[in-house]
Amino acid sequence: MTKAIRIHETGGPEVLTWEDVESGEPGPGEVRLRQTAVGLNFIDVYQRTGLYPIGTLPAAIGMEAAGIIEATGEGVSGFHTSDRVAYAMALGAYAEERVIATDRLVKLPDGVDDHQAAAMMLQGMTAFYLLRRTYPVKAGETILVYAAAGGVGLILCQWAKHLGANVIGCVGSHEKAELARAYGCDHTILYRDEDIAARVREITNGNGVPVSYDSIGKATFESSIDSLAPFGMLVSFGNASGPVEPFNPGILAAKGSLYFTRPTLATHTATRESLDECANKLFAIVSSGQVKINVGQTYPLAETAQAHRDLEARKTLGSTVLVP
Image (tube, rainbow, N blue to C red; front, side):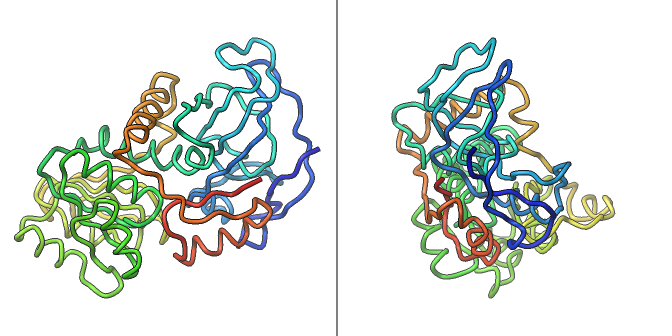
């Protein structure tokens, strides 16, 4: 037996229950993992509330963690007991132990500790595909990043600065603005107090930005659109305020022949080759010191409900790690 956080129904943080579960034995192509650190992400909230259906309940939620392989199933190659590994985009992370297929796992380099790994796999690989695949940022460009003091935001801002970009970060408080600037933001916008699009136009001398990386969704769709230069791209990669409502594509024409895309990390890591590229690029830039992983807070895994409350209330800074 092991312990896990599961949901028996969708709803608020109160549906997260800490209970005994069977960890099971690994089957063909699987390993049993003793987890040492679990990442917290907004996708977990979407699963808990039912915005992203996860199938039959009860079920453990959570999508990323780091740990140590304790047993291997038949036919496993490339992974061995005692290997330190991490993963993202594999439902069921909120557990002390779990069985998982090796096609989701990557080995951790010595220079990355378990808490860093749990904090950066999903968020860091997201930053990679946003900056290098979805819209390849070039030196000298000015970009807009929402939730710049969050887990993805802090990685995104640092990586963009490394690429030579000028970064405008939207944040919710002066404390978060200070943190975002320390991690690469050239300009910060307090979205509660300022007109985002007007400030972006002011900063860019009326030109707008070529790309807006928007993880907020419904509440910031119009601000993102109005911040873009002609031929600009709105990259909607999250729904912290709810999903973007249906819109007339004609608005993209009227606002300057704009592009709109809704990418996911699942697509960008669907093959072993793609997963390895994302993970290796992330490990390399973190190991180089160009990108630092900010673990702003940790919670015992048993207290995941409180972590969800704090995340949704915008009380967290940087990444959050749940400790089994």
